[in-house]
Image 1 (tube, helix red, strand yellow):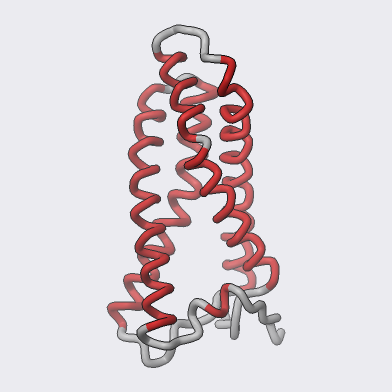
Image 2 (tube, helix red, strand yellow):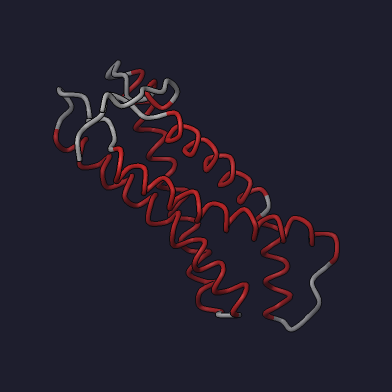
Length: 168
């Protein structure tokens, strides 16, 4: 895939939309966790969290769809290269974290759906474990972007705010 100078408006919009949805997922976690525990205990879920529970399910489904769109755009349009002077170890770290985040953005909704719609208990356990891994990967991603911006003084962070159209 050809390297492009920056991210497209669609890539940036998808990135920030997924950020908001993932943040919401963490905020709506208590409702879905309570409903899941009720399900496992063969009890009725409390009515007070029903709306947030269904919103969590819907947002998770949307994360899956948008993650697939992001992967499609990255495969067809490309992504900007790392800074030329960036050490190879930093490049590999960034690639690993990005790959992990993309994988989790696909696997978390799938395991959540398997647990919620099919009643697969181990999928629910895996979903919870992967949520913690995603939090760690997001923290590393943010730390890397801030390091690039404030320490290395590169444009890596800025290009996720300033769209650039492909010259093709």
